[in-house]
Length: 289
Length: 289
Image (tube, rainbow over all chains, first blue to last red):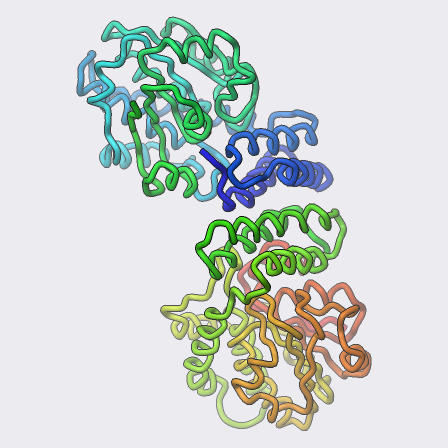
């Protein structure tokens, strides 16, 4: 996905937001915003890949803040929210392995993409995530290609998005494993935004539920192939299906040619929605072959 | 008023907003945003006057759009809304010249500061401005120094803010004139945002209601003394009271030492509200002596 001019102010808005998550020291906030502005000015070109720019901007801003992780508390909160929602999610998905169970698990995991912070107008409702979850589950997927995914589950590479959300992804992983498929889970190689990392895999003991866990090899936004380990690139080439969760993974994976690929996400910004030809604020499970 | 790091993304958001007011041609929008980003990168320094930066940013963005006026239609709409509201505003202010009439006129003129576009979350409600006007009039001023203005109305310099809004300012001007005061009205020297210019003075025939009309001498945000005509600087020095409408005039006039000065505005952004030590979204008539 290419950058849109509206991404310019949105990116700097997020840099400011996350600086305030870390500190109320105005000098540090200024340093982060100034660094983000520098990086944006250096990298912004119409037609450039959005994630290449956002990676440069966020890395610069992080560096200016001493490379501390501004989303630490938000990630802890996300994991708690996910753990609290799991009994309800499980009961909504139902028992056993089935075509309908898979579809419902995809719905739950896609709603999990709501566990996000810092996207204008789309912060998760911390106070009543359960009601929000139930409401979204009742509404279901607005784009639903789940039936077409079923024949492709033999050897899946599943790219996780956010902390907390990755726990809901295990509902889909259970279905794939139950159908006899292999699953390679991919998390971010180092902290970036509230993205899931190996820390999340360990906290939720997800390693035992999948065949393999790989990382993206760096803290780049989404997946940067230049920074990815050889096993991940090889996995992308050999897999029967890539499942790509969330907007940042969409932004990057849509730049490569890998097929088939399923994008599971909530459209939380106009640029991603436009690029997909969809409305904002809808639940999407789209297969691209 | 000094720039706050949150102004960075807000400024670029407005550049994007107004580019889309002018055109849906993506190249022009990109050119405007790129020019704004360049200017921001060139001028942004913590501690710098906010309006110095915003002037550079908007001028660059306007230049990239061929110096066409993106707010033309919004200004026409603002004037229509103001004309439609005037009978109600007049009836709420009441007949004749009086202390209470002056206060009510200040309330009406300050509500007029709602006639604005492009400030995040504070676009005027075009559909139901009358109901909004009545609601705000009933609520009244949250900061009300009008009683303290009364002894200072001998020779007033009144700096207008937006198109449309300036028509409501005439209610205050009528009271000042009725009390025997002189009024110098100041409008922007050239189109910038939806600010009132000589065109507004002519459309509403305001010239005959005041003793003199001056301009700021340029399209700078607020009042830039370096670009102001000598008569305006002299008027600031000799006046019995400066009345400064709106946020951009506050941002600039608060950088100079002129006293006494009355700020009439609705606090539509956090940076201005913080600088004034006030909440956002309140109606303010504050005297600084």
